[in-house]
Amino acid sequence: MVDKEIVLTVHGLKKLEDELELLKTVKRKEIAERIKQSIAFGDISENSEYDEAKNDQAQIEDRIKKLEAMLRRATIIDEDDINTDIVSIGATVQVKDLEFNEIVEYMIVGSVEADPYELKISNESPVGKSLIGSRVGEIVEIQIPDGITRYEVLQITR
Image 1 (cartoon, rainbow, N blue to C red):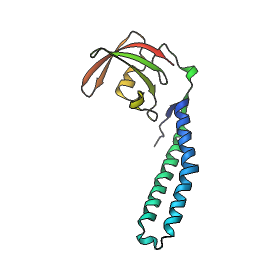
Image 2: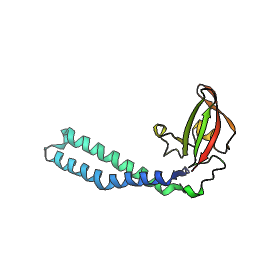
Image 3: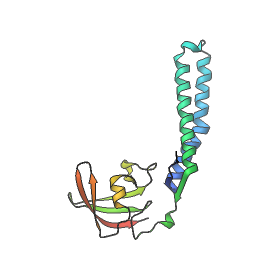
Image 4: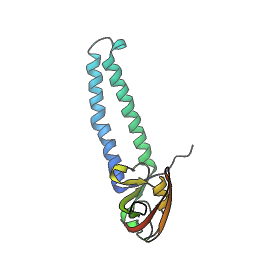
């Protein structure tokens, strides 16, 4: 299986690196201490605290492996390299929803960094994929679950 490239902004890279550091330095120690304490309760064959701590340990180690793999495959989008003539990964695009006459601003990011609550949409999402390559003034039709929506690209920034 070919590993998929991970596209990150500098901010996204820092966020993943910080999470990895926290897991390796703080969470591992916390879990080790919980395991040590649960062993002190006696027989581990019927020790729910021990089982829970071991499960948590496995989840943390799995997340560490995933983060390390993502960081190895990461391609970093440098803000200075973002072209504001067309919508691309790393760009912030202001669009007008022509159906609802609303203006919204999205940052186009890789799928790992996407967070709809922060208006960071994936370049692989229907909206992100449709906006990539468009220019200011263009009207983009986007197939969404409810049908087709139309956005006018108003502004592209870094």
